[in-house]
Image: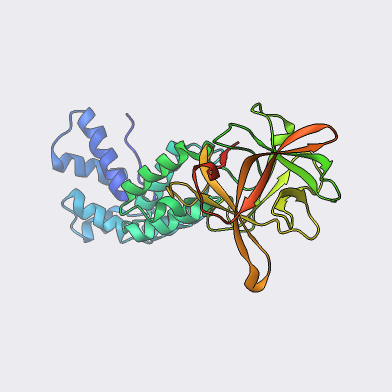
Length: 323
């Protein structure tokens, strides 16, 4: 192992550790000998021999402190802070191990030891940043924060993001919420029904929200647009039947998790789908439900889906959401 030179591009603490390791491997164990070797490995641009003599350096600790008093170390720390400010972690693509190693190394080099300050840099480095609220608040130390972040990444593939393609499965029957270009009788709205037990194109929806995060959260409203039908958003008509359309319809829904485990939607969550229908004082909070009523359109039978304001029961856990 080659003796490392100190030129201001490494933290003095780390450099001295490397010097000690090299000396140990070469069976040099006396402190005075190690100190003399360390002095010879400092670039004279940083500290020259006269400066060492003037400061009467007699130990590695004193040498370390002298190095930290130089402008080169201040520049090194500030440079490490700038690198920390520019550090970004793309949740979808980047290697967690490499990122954590670089993040903690930069915190060490910048001498940022306070957890709250470390957390500030950590938060601003995650892209998209809004994904991490769920575990940041639960962390009281850097080790705990990293552990919670790692747990979050394990589940990331299950998280349903904005504009994801999803299917909505009725738990009681195993049938999928579906739509098509067929219209209800005497209506301009598309048919929405409880379809087959086998997934097909009629059961695919694009889920979107109107908040700034990339997550589908339970606090914000969402829209469900049928994937294969143009301008076909899930809504309800004046008779509370589920329908598809755009003009003149309320298309904003809210999700309610049956167990309230977290604030964002994951694949295979059991949820209720709710909508506020009406205006001013006549607004009704409705829940989507499938029931046994059969609609006959163009000689085909379709199981009806509607919204109601009655007491919520097991049959109302109608949506089994997954990508």
